[in-house]
Image 1 (spheres, rainbow, N blue to C red):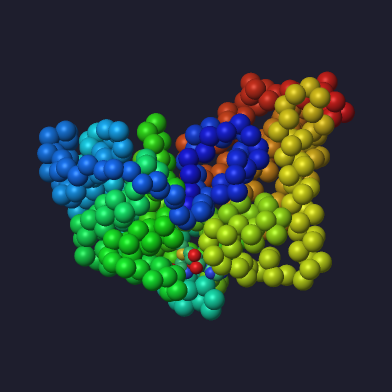
Image 2 (cartoon, helix red, strand yellow):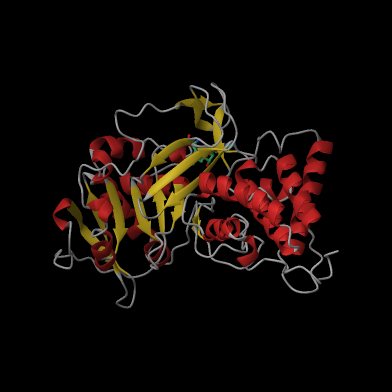
Length: 427
Ligand SMILES: C[S@@+](CC[C@H](N)C(=O)[O-])C[C@H]1O[C@@H](n2cnc3c(N)ncnc32)[C@H](O)[C@@H]1O
């Protein structure tokens, strides 16, 4: 699952990523991706690291005995575990000695008693519980009312794996590192990890293979925002969330605290299942079903996919319209046919599609279009909505939120001020 987004395209780069906002630069973001990484066979080199490369905080880390090196003398990867991280839950990270030396010096690893504001300690009473969901395995059910915009979870990973290891090492070596990394976790967190879904029909040969398989099914892509290669991470509770094409929750990963936040996008009632979307929900229904079947191995039974055929067709039409509007509104050239009315139509279509967790994308475009024709009041109203939803659903520090804050402070000084005046679409 997940990702580090970087694109200027308004359209999805591929089906495992959420559509990218044109103004997004490097915001860490999450989208569900195919579970299994292809790994090619390589020779490996097993050596124990001496630990001398570490700087601060090293005393708190345990390191596995086995390390594996990429072919041709490439990077070496080992399993490191911080036992007291996040209120004693612990975290295991598979990466290079150089990278762990950097990571271990981050403030979040300095104070052993600090739980980083993560909602996983004994005093926190969750608003959900595990339950068997027919046809979906285990899922999470609300146990009390949850208001839209409220944070449902904030969790740190059990296991993080450097993407370079996943891509470059033989799967057997990756599994060996993962097995060791999970063994090193504190007992409770290890137990919860090992309880995660493996798909019952799969025959697994040993501990390492089981851990590898659990990780493959339950991982998110989590960039660290430090300019280095990305990571894939498995979380013990976040990974229990089942998929829905029109989910009632969204998630984002904060690379500064290594915390995965799950936020309600609509009011949720006790007994209702909490859901997130594993895929880009702005694909037509057949493409969504294909992706879920091919990459996740289950037929989508969500409300939207199993609706009456005429309702599915209407939804597909709206999605086609939305994608066309993205093209027009994200065209900043002088021949663009964008108008504020088209941006407001986009807002309406997002609402009708139930894409509540992504409203900020439509509000952003509406703010830009109104400012683009010099209508400051309307631009500011949409900018406010964009900031409100953006902060709740994507977290702070995102470039598009900063842009909207600038617009709100002084619309006339924002780069979009009257940029559409004189263009084809403007009247
Ligand atoms: C990340 S896990 C979610 C938790 C999982 N249900 C469990 O028992 O731990 C992903 C797996 O859950 C199942 N799943 C998730 N959403 C589903 C859905 N909407 N319909 C059917 N199965 C689903 C699939 O087996 C999928 O590979």
